Image (cartoon, rainbow, N blue to C red; front, side, top):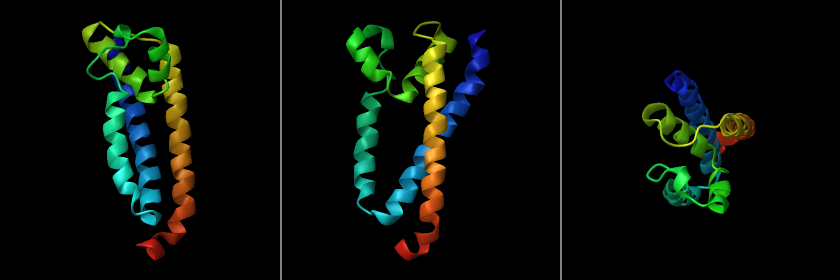
Length: 122
């Protein structure tokens, strides 16, 4: 039954990726060295997402910090939908949806402000 929520999870992932991608691409046109920081940040955030380890194995204080990452609830929902193990909570998923909307809108606003100066920066 939880497999039916997978298209919503894919939309959340796509929106989050699009928002972060727009923000990063808008900022790297002006700040060229930001590219090196992004590569390091992506590697660091791989450890802040429960891809390899389930969320249930962590203590409560680490679980709260890890849930600040909007991808955590999406990954755990995928795990619960396909394997039946993990954590599925509508509140955590609601936080991910809200964070995705905020990041996507922020990316659009930043892109619209920087768009006029793209050709001058490149």
